[in-house]
Amino acid sequence: MRSEYIKLYALVQNIKFAVLSSVGDDGEMHSRPMTPLQIDHAGNIWFIASAAQHKTEDLFKNPKVNLVYVSKNFETFVSICGSATVLQDSKKLNELWDPNMQAWFPDGIAEDELVLIQVHIERAEHWDRTKGRMVQVIGPINAPPPPGTVDRSQPNLSDMPPAGSGLHH
Image (cartoon, rainbow, N blue to C red; front, top):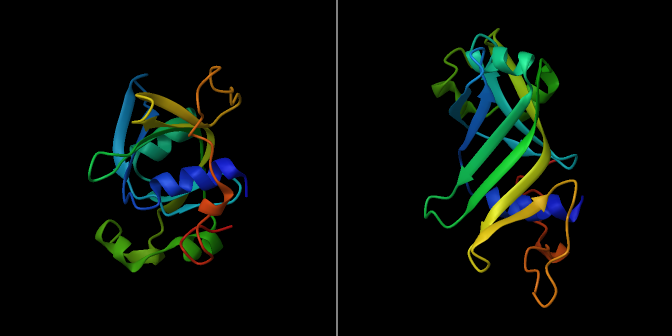
């Protein structure tokens, strides 16, 4: 697993909800809270949704999304940009399903309208309090820090979560 994903996972692993923003038919951004179910080793974040919801229609038309995670104590702020794909995959759905999700999907996993939203991470950044600015975690250009500074944003591979802690392939 790339060290960038390890760092990202460490930042968001205890945050239960993310705000998913997508572009609607009206060209405006629309946001809604979602429960991220998995960050996999390929750099995807997985959600379950209903195909009948506007968000899935929006994603077919424009897959660009932004996810925002904020910790309960307001100490961790993470913004993730990516491309979303709406999928029907019963094997993956069964893998990700949690009985607590029946609060949103009363018919459970048998509900006909259930789909997966796979967000492929293209860029991620978080608020670094020590630097007083957003710091890139994942992106096309991981620029070195300015001369004379210590780059504390680089992950330590020993930070990788232990097997079975919720990070899946």
